[in-house]
Structures are given as C-alpha cells and as structure tokens.
Image (cartoon, rainbow, N blue to C red; front, side, top):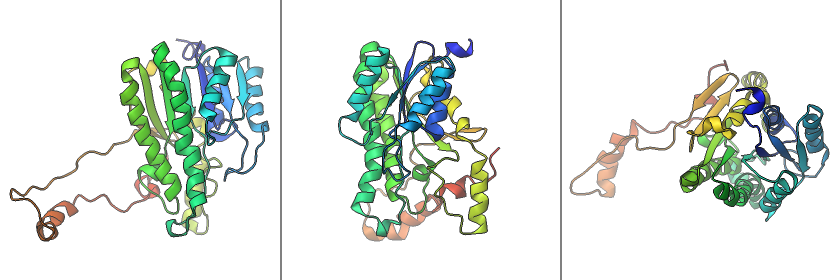
Length: 306
C-alpha cells in the first residue's frame, strides 16, 4: 500500500484546521490521498474574532502539494453549522467519508469563579460542535455504509486539571458521545473513536509558567509537536482501522496509549441491605482503598515523553 492509497478517494472534514493539531491532520490526510475540507473560523484562543486566512493558508498548502482542498469558515458552535459544513463538502467533493472534530477554545477559570458565559462558550464549541457536525454527517455515512469519526478529547477531562471545569466537562462529554455514536452506527459500518492529544499548540499555550516546575512542564510539552498526533488520526479515518471502534487513545510524542473506560473496580455486599450507618462503618471503608486518587493529568503522565 502506497502513501496515496490509504485515504485515496475519501473526503475528510477537519475542524479547527487552520493551525495546530488540526492543520497537521489536514495536511497529512491530503498527503495520504484524501480531499480535505479545511474548516476554521480563525478565532483567537478564547473564540473571539474571525479570520479566513489560517484556513485558506492550509488549503493552499494542500493544493500546492498536488492535493485537493477547500476552505470552510463556519463556526461549529452555531446552530445548523454542522449541516452547512457537510453540505459544503458534498457540493465541492460529492461525498463525505471522515469527520475530525478538532475545533476548540478555552475559557479557563476556577469553578467557583466561572461565569455562565464561560461555561456555555466552551461547551458550544467542543461538545455541541462535535454533536452538530457528527449528527449532520451520520445519515450520509449510514446511507453509504461507511464512515469514520475522529473526536478530540483530552486527558484534562479523562483525568482532571485545575480551573477547566467547562473544558473538562466538554471533553468527558465527547468521550461519552463518541461511544454512543460507535454503538448506534456500528451496524452501518461507521466507526467513532477519540484521541486525547499531548501537543504544544494554542490550546495549551495558556498553561501558567509561574514556578520552575510549571516552566519545566511546558518545556516538555513543547517537544510534542502537533505533527505527532496526525498519523493516528489518519489511520483511524482509513479503512485500515475498520476493526477499531469506540476506543480512546492518547498520543504523547512517540507514545500511543489505549485509555481505560469506566468499569466496576470493587464492590461490597450486605445481604440485609445498607443503611447510612452501615455504609459509614463498613461499606465505604472497604471501598476506600480502591478510590481514584485526586490526580491531575500531569500527575498520571509524570514521566518525560518518549
């Protein structure tokens, strides 16, 4: 199989593809033969403003390299945008085979200080945007009996991080949404998987560097370029991944991790049933040794990236 064969004939929609992880995914998709709809509104990290230049620049790179690409500047946060994006892909390329839900913004704030607007803005882009575009593509995937969704989740949601309740909730929601899509569309040969990426991009450039430890952590993250994420996204979008469905992967530099999903860890049983008192005296002490620690993403992934 040559490079041009893996995605040959396929059409991929990549959101947030004007820079960072999305850009590298779009470029690699095209290098492997896909026709790419480059979606990006050119907003700032917090979602403000619009600029078509980043998306146009990526599309131009693809075309100059001999590929096919078009630019879409819809905001995935807006109602009906998913349908318009899918229609654009169909109008330009005649079909749609893969959706990469990558677009995102940040509005970091400690939970007790977070405003309704900061909560809504992040969920609208990440979770609502992922739902809207996926829902719009699903009937086409179902009809043609094939299709792949690749969603970006985050270890910030899967594990935890400070001051990101909106982002973490959205990214956990995406993980649950992906599993539901995988279950509901499996019989139509449609797949849905998640990637939790570690990469230096605008989305992590707001990490504080107030202490030597924080500064050292940021320097490690800078080693992990967005280009390291793209190969897994291209693989998951291709027919080579036909047996991979409903999974969550983490990519950290040259490492790929299969992430666990919630399952029972330990149980306690009492034949006569439980009371608050017996739970306090016996039930919870028996379970406590298996409690999930109060860890953040950086605590779990504590070693240097390989």
